[in-house]
Image 1 (tube, rainbow, N blue to C red):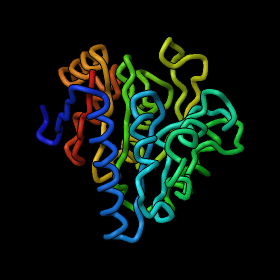
Image 2 (image 1 turned 30 degrees about the horizontal axis):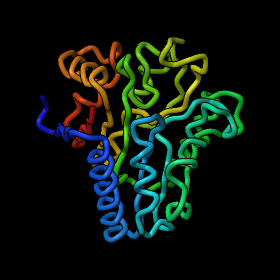
Image 3 (image 1 turned 60 degrees about the horizontal axis):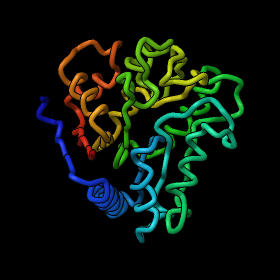
Image 4 (image 1 turned 45 degrees about the horizontal axis):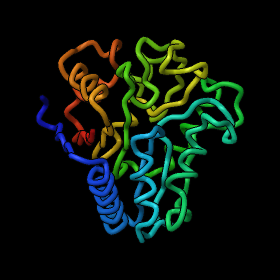
Length: 237
């Protein structure tokens, strides 16, 4: 295992959520103290939802925190599959409703044509993010870096923070394959990456990703193989 990966495994989801929530609060407070502003990159999915709700109740200087998307389906914010809507419903509640929210979806017809505008928004964030929260799919994707996707090679190589992706339709992607995502370079703008997984199936996929080298097959490997940014793996049953 690379030296920059730390595994934080918990016996219960309650302990997992509290530890994650407190860790995020500490990192965001430190960023504000150091730079006057903090940046938190957030993913959708079931794993982080309880931690987001926990974090939303913590008394931080939320007006000095930028919350930005890790990835997004190219759908409007009122769509049932919108990550933007999910973040608004889970994290940007209670005390956290005063955070500045930076979204990925814009009025462009496609993610490809909307990438430049999205990139401009992300370049306005401070150069180093406090925390980037990543999930992981059963196919080994993270963010919207999907196996063998159209745009994957560019997303792994570009110096841009964001990249347009068109995934290969599968049970994991569903029918909405067009996405905007942080590029690998964008993920590596963070001081720390927190990879959130739960359950035995996801643990097995994570171990498979660790054991292999083919990034196109399991793009999560690009994050696990890099040594520039510490990766903290949070897991609970």
